[in-house]
Length: 210
Image (cartoon, rainbow, N blue to C red):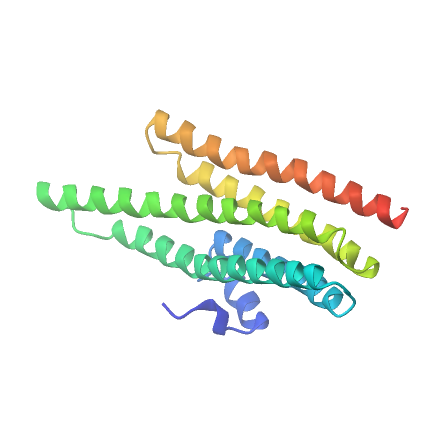
């Protein structure tokens, strides 16, 4: 599959708004997360030239590198989510005229269903880790980009909520034990992000006096 990152924003918008979309809800969510990373990196980049000490400069450069690393991983996850969903749908078209075909078909469906759970769950964990970067950035960035940090937190929470929902839906036909375990893991990321988002907004509001 061709990567969606070669599409223009208009192409992504247009191809999604059809009855035969290529991008999944997970991929659209991950695109938003990647743009959240870009916004986070922007706040750090703008602030970098205003820093005086080498220690602060090195710290911000490290935060920028960590953000870029997560952004790249989330970019790949968006393509992977589309690929997993396409393979999941294709598995239903496999022949089922013999017992061996039926067995292979069931195995393919389960395999691609699990992949469609793994991708958003791992992505939610990656996005949750970005809050550490935000908290480290708050005392170091310029005051005029503090609202952008709060915006990053809000974007990331929305993304994690969507990914947790995808895990819940895609886990529906698994065993009860597997379903509970996977949805609980996704729920932990969502709860952590909810708490972190509130703290980020509170800290930013206090610093801005709003």
